[in-house]
Length: 445
Image (cartoon, rainbow, N blue to C red; front, side, top):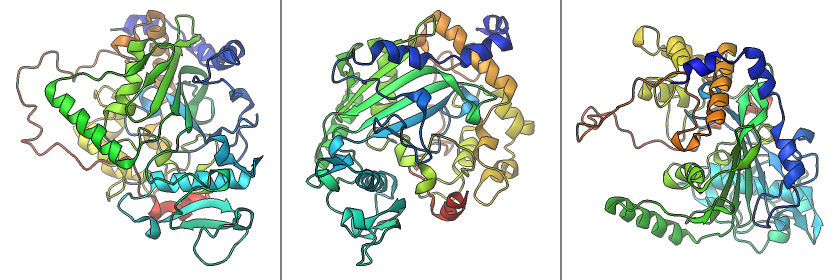
């Protein structure tokens, strides 16, 4: 119960804290001082990104817009975030020279591979893309038999990537070795665009060190199922300094605030929180959450903003994703502790579906209407995180709780939860989204 400590922090102090840039200070110390397998601290975050999402520092990092995964990563539950991707040098060049056209095309191919319906054969795949110059690439990517200066969709997937990566097979649903992701988890600034504050809570770096053949993925899943059945706990290679390596070829390295708000390496135990999601749950696409949920086409390239993104359904579903989450969970977070969401959308204990549908495709609102907190709640969540940082008690959880969660079992007495008997367990969830119905509207925005 941290309510007393939270109340002792003023709004002005919380705002000042959230607006301090702790990334630049860490970069100044660490750039050029880390081992080759670690995050090189080469992204100049304060310099920002251009309109197409490319880092202005020329590092090759590219930001993209995505629909946040339901629950924990909604701003109303404590954090804002952004994600950047970078492909290996050969995927960004042609004949040894940097090529923007090649880089854009390879990112488009990767996006189509990860975000499209896995059940659709490669030859039948159609995916919206930013304008691609087939003449510069020398490849017909939309299947019309011509090389055009600006195509806006892929028709079918080629067998290999392009440019200097033309010898690299395009394996559906997996990332090529050398792919990097950078994920910053941030405080809330109610006056900043998207409430994305300058201060980072965490910085997470993912590097795909090994690319596995498809059959190896299935064997790894089978081994994991056997281990779970036998009660064998997950064990990963690595330590606090190196990060941890999972069975699917990803190295995950995380930084988190120390008691003074500076970014430090996570301990080995703290790293397990990252591995639990990026390795231990089945809903991810090759261990990732954000890129398969990128807004398709040009509208999805740029620094993260959920403004204008409608509440589209998950792939294979008809109902909007947030609506379905609220309906099934009965609240706005996994612990049912977000009182603001309960008051807004569960008046008298029942979900106001009509209000939630305002952010659905064709409605008069978009995602922030559903998942952005009030100013008061945003500052309270920042204060709760500040208390947590002062305690350095991340091994007991890092979610900013404004008060003790009441809908949590203190002890388990029954063998069954009763959910299965009540028909309230679901196995139809998927990471991927059904963008088709709203693509034209998003592009126009």
